[in-house]
Length: 112
View 1: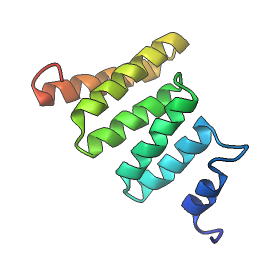
View 2 (view 1 turned 180 degrees about the horizontal axis):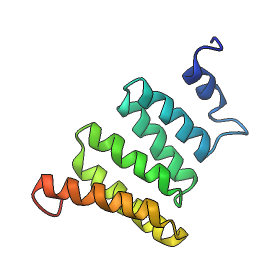
View 3 (view 1 turned 30 degrees about the vertical axis):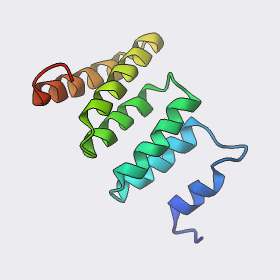
View 4 (view 1 turned 60 degrees about the vertical axis):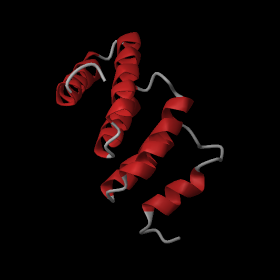
């Protein structure tokens, strides 16, 4: 592992004392930057397991799943994220995921 390999550095922290939602979102962000939405979705699922109220993680998960072509799972992620955002009063995240959800449902032709 080199200092130039942020994914390896972040993965080395997983499972340790610093493991948590923020670490998993950071790892997912690095994976997305390399075009690996599948691995990013796995890390984002772990992030929302650590913190089910982390609306930004739900939004990223929905985006990653949508990028992977899993519209049904993306819809579920956005719905969970909207619920989390409502609980936390995060109006911006609620609004953004609502837009993503409507676009996805419109493309899918209904209530996926």
